[in-house]
Length: 323
Image 1 (spheres, helix red, strand yellow):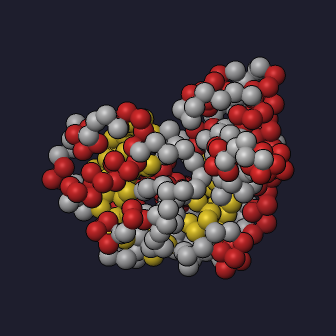
Image 2: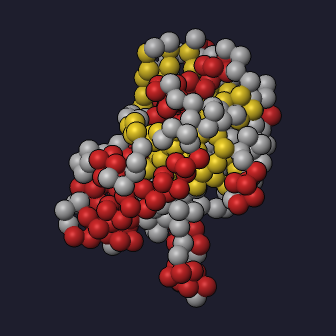
């Protein structure tokens, strides 16, 4: 059985080709994919006729509330491309190539108000909780660590924290709600004033409300993260990372009381960093057993989702599968 997971991330398109226990992972920057064929790149790793199922993510995933075959999905599974995050076009190109190819594919929804496994109070509070790849990360954590109940915090360009209880995603915080990431963060009073005065659009504010605003560095979505991390001992960059850790810890601590056994999983390019040691820094503020999910966890988890769907799974952490 050969399955593929595709993570449409902030900095690139990450693919995991899973053939039993063998995993092959490759990443293409979103700007690079505009100049080449995704399927031609995929052919370097696998014969396309051998692929049993692809699990694909795209943007916010708020136009569908179940995992569905791609041929039943309208508008690429989104309500609108207007929203949170920089738009480059690489993900759109990949989605359309895969749809036109005829390779069996399911589209993963984001976690939003329409997804019925979420606690009704979270659905009432927030229109959107996470983009689709976070379900892949949560599923990988569930399978790898054999966890049914835990808090997952994925820390990278943005921070999204989810609450999983009894094998069901029940709630969480989207990137624009609580903790900051390196690029994105919630819009505070200062940014509200800048938006109202016409100096910034809301999406621009969100895209620069993370650690970049503290470090006073912005070199685009792919370069800014590396610059801040590599200059951690610079005064502004250190304050930016330390502030990020504080905000993430507060977000995790707000969800842990819902669990009988306190377990936290950290993921993402920042959540798994060892220089500086982000898991150790978070552990200072979080009274919980902490697991660290290394690697390209979203694409791996998505490939696992595709595999279990082929085996007959009718839901993935509570999110319904409709075939």
